[in-house]
Length: 427
Image 1 (tube, rainbow, N blue to C red):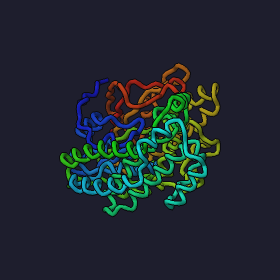
Image 2: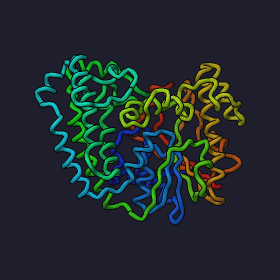
Image 3: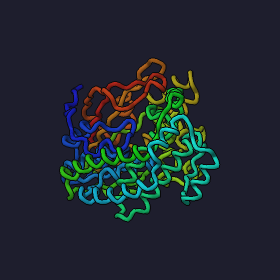
Image 4: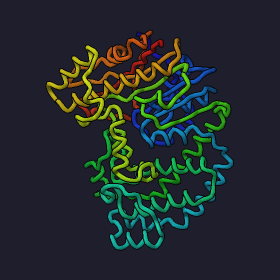
């Protein structure tokens, strides 16, 4: 097995515009595109996440399509891969900044609110006086202080009411999305989902100042720099498309065939993106009701908890290694076995869809990690090779070490991943 050689030094561009767990390492994405990307055709990433591969494809003058079932992932990828003229961005920011200054609280007020919050009466009065719209987030006051809700609603309304082209508005909405978690009571670090931890309660007890306006200004400043760098090095002739697509139904959404697929599929029971992105989805209007959001739930792959009646959870596994691991997991935790079955069947369905969309002779490149179950390593490379047959033949395997990819895997059965593997298949 060869070590993947990639540069750990790379321009940040728009890669860090939004904190997204388990994202592609930009250096790895760049190296894989250079080696396996379609220079004259099209490359597909069916689990595009926050768009790391797509950003690098535009820099490499390649055409690429990214898809994901997560609405926030699709929004973030679209916004990060847009080319924003720096002078226009700064002009719109000046207008927006002036308007924000009129509705921001004073620094003294934020100091006073360090240990307190506004009353219910003041909260409803401020909303009524300003005519603000508040998203219908379940347990809203559990996740946010009352004055923070008002501040976020003021920032959002200011963004939406400031005249500018849609793509530039999306840039500022991306900056807004980037501060929602930090403005909330939820711990920003765990990737397991959404939780108010003992650590956050301790911080609040010690006095935590939350100023969404200041957080927003910092996000815009940081992302203006990244967007300017991206403008300077990205190719305007490169076509980048992003769609919200269920990976198990790819063929119904794409007519073209792809010369290469480069992707990092979700890990089994590692990151719960559905829960993780709940607050951002509501604030951005990507979901309007909890019922609407729940319709998406069965389409997420890799969830740690799956209903027994979900489609992929009811279908028996058909390959020997997958069957053996399901039995081993079921002996200790039947619920986890259901989630594993759902994951494997969903990945088989995805690979079958890719077989219909990758041209003969094309490449499928998958980045995977070996997780563990009860102290025993799951050989994910061998499992994926088994699932990909007979449509794809494994050509070779590369690997590289992970230093920090914002992945708190230890929260799930010690499934710590410190090395990833690049599986290169031929169609």
